[in-house]
Length: 71
Length: 179
Image 1: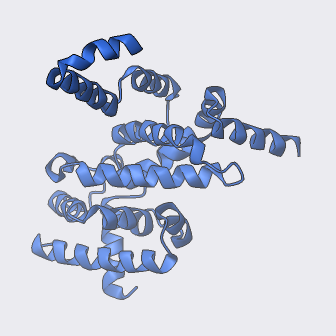
Image 2: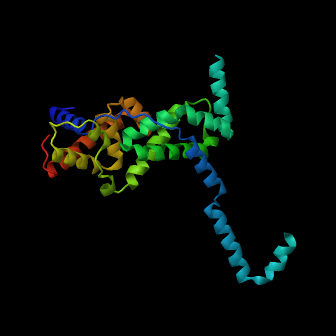
Image 3: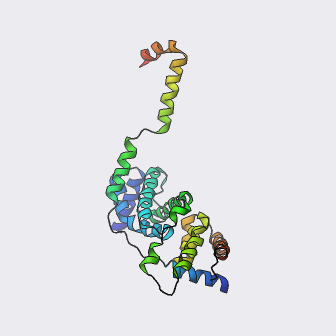
């Protein structure tokens, strides 16, 4: 690092000093909420599959009894 | 020896998707992940959100985790990626809040406008360079640690530091600040 670069680093450190910040609370309750939210949400590809099925039934309604028979 | 075995068991249970093991690892490592993240993003609120985001990514990827590897190193890597994604998407105008560390240690010798312009020059850096500049130039973290966290070589870190300094010099010049 040359002198010019050292000057930039020195200015940067002067203006934005290193951070010594500690976590002052337990984040586990937030993490748990996040896990619960994600667990209850339906993934986008499930919606896409559902939409495809509805579309398929709309295009060929004669398959509805076949589908109902197999359910 | 017993402690080491206990930790290995914990990592194995986590890799199998055990929520209790994940909670234990979360509690063990949340402070360290937060400390690392806040150094990169320099915003305590965002660092808390990113700590949760980091552990969410870790939880989703539990099946890919090798219990023989260091959980701490892996968590740091995931945290760095989450912070990088945050810096890429955060709008620069939004990020132009006063740097909280600077307000904590207000220095009368540094004029306010120079401080603001320097912060602006820093925030105008591309996200990839900003991460390296924060960790190497401000926090003075060892290049090896930065390289491991970014998943790149030490040589690549040095190159990014060089590019970040060059960008900063250009930005500062444009903003009328002579270091």
